[in-house]
Image (cartoon, rainbow, N blue to C red):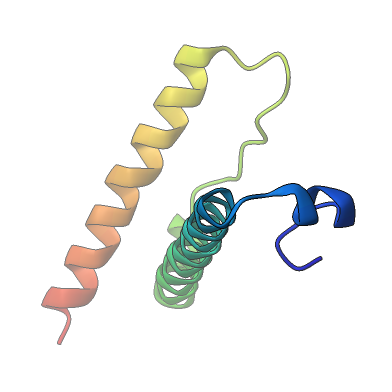
Length: 94
């Protein structure tokens, strides 16, 4: 089913339980949509940056199973700072 429920489970749910499932599914869809929007926005920022400053584009570092939590957090922090600088440069360029 579209809600991700087994057919038999669907028919055993009370109206209240069904409402909870529907609210949860809507929240999950909304969250996935927001995540997709963030990725699209960040991608657009990187494309603009790469177009205008291709030689200064940072190298991509793959996160592996060996990457420590501190290294992952540092990568996230670096990406956020780069994104902020890109946004600021695009704002001031006009």
